[in-house]
Length: 246
Image (cartoon, rainbow, N blue to C red; front, side, top):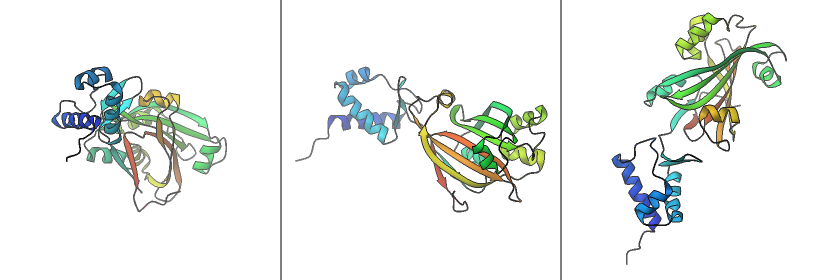
């Protein structure tokens, strides 16, 4: 005797097929739980089981307070010797864009001084940018650069070049003839902070990926300490063999 599939799995099959057929497009919001429960003639508990199954499979994402959406495909980003953010996204069919959030001079605190291997209180340039894949926010990156190495980094002309380039690596190469090589990256998870939640369009209790990187020039001198917060539901990080993880 053939085993009968549970109702919630039957509902999940229908919704999965709908996504395959384009009834629900990537990024589109599904009808409310109440409407879907009425559509399938089940209670909301059964409907939620189907939604949970599809969420676990990566078909759907649930934004608390907003609703249920068809999940977009995960962006895979390789952590390797070269910083290749723009190229990586382009290879996967995404247009990498950046919005400049903050540009200012600050004294190095203990974490920045340690990352850049400079003296506590030494002046550094802070450049913070919102990273987007097409028009979807996926990261907030803060880079700290030693002003002893780049004394004119924050000049308006240089910031204009950075905005036009949309790439820190290309900017450093163009303006300073400086290579931009990743020396180490440490990745951890934490809950999103309120300011980042606003920029990344996430609920405040959402986990994110935190990547702390130290980047050097072609002579091995440290030129950047970076702290990047990435949407854990959209980004998948993997390490290439040419990088020493620390």
